[in-house]
Length: 155
Image (cartoon, rainbow, N blue to C red; front, top):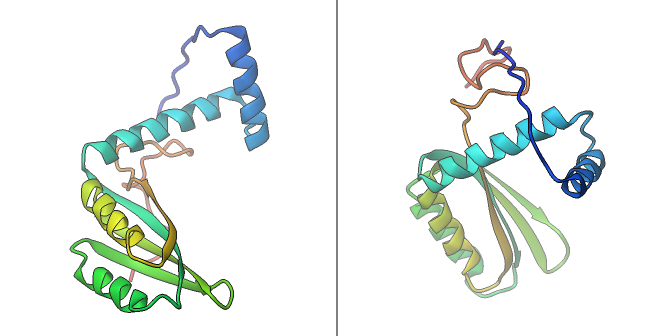
């Protein structure tokens, strides 16, 4: 387990009150865990910006009645040079479908791919959410994301 280090933070009273309200809404039991998560989020953002290997999801909602839309989306997915780990397809109603693609690759590559998918005629909304494989980020249990024993097997 990683060593915990205590440090002091000076902050305006009103900003601290706002922070406390937000962390209470999110269900944090203490400020320390909320601050650790903010730091982890900033590290992920920096990894993404520095074009390191990253993972993410691309979520799109589209009108499946749009001419050639399915063929265009399939073509983009097959020509993607990163890794598509999984695709979830859901029929929302008679007209709308939702797809969630789990992707892995360099941050810039994933952003370009998401932009291509979102710009296809018939796609109503789309969003890329990236995270990191987390090799350098301690997890909530204090261990690094890798280097620990796994309780499951990878196939």
